[in-house]
Image (cartoon, rainbow, N blue to C red; front, side):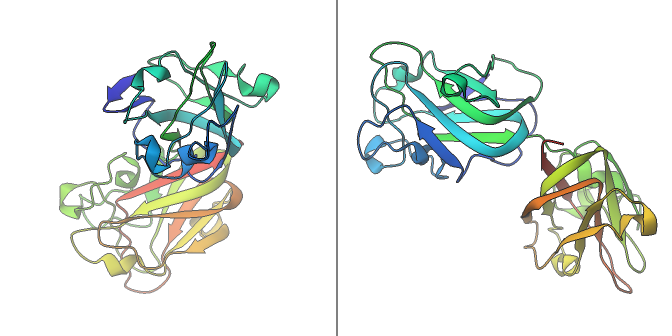
Length: 286
């Protein structure tokens, strides 16, 4: 467990994407009109309750729950506490993750400090047992496992010693190519592929573009997902085409689940260069 400022977190590995923002949230009760359950997943970590971005319950054994819509391997939960008063009220709250709504989800698996492996679940509960308790949450963020980090990656060609395929899944989003954490191909119709080792229902891919030059080169690249290595995987399902990504920027592509073991980035055309400074892949339950 790490603590910093008004927030605290359960942490497994590097920061990935927040599953909770905008998801449906409910709670045991609502103290007044300022304290709606949805406030904890509005993407705003404002900790002054009076500014209307925190939750607030009333009564005994209060709880709050977010529905992630699908089963995920949760790797990290971050909570921002109330900042204008009453910070001690959060003490004793439990983070529980799982798939059951028995007892409003408050019998799900209890996370413990220094949890070192992902926990599967669709629901994340914050439960504060006791009489006369108030539960106030100013933001709850839930993070999922990046399936691509550390996985085996290959590409159509390699421009020089700095541009290895594995650089896009090294967990480092450094966008200056000269620092050795980006890929770089050479030749026509370049492609890059990561092997997720198993078939997953992929729902999101994030790509970090080169930042020191040439950001326009990514335009027209395609994200393809599937199980076939025919045509080096470039004939798998086309999920989306990539438009402009800011220099050094990370763009996230969300889509309905697509089943596949392989994720390809394919850039059709002659005299094309494909440079990826990080590719992150996220999925629901297999």
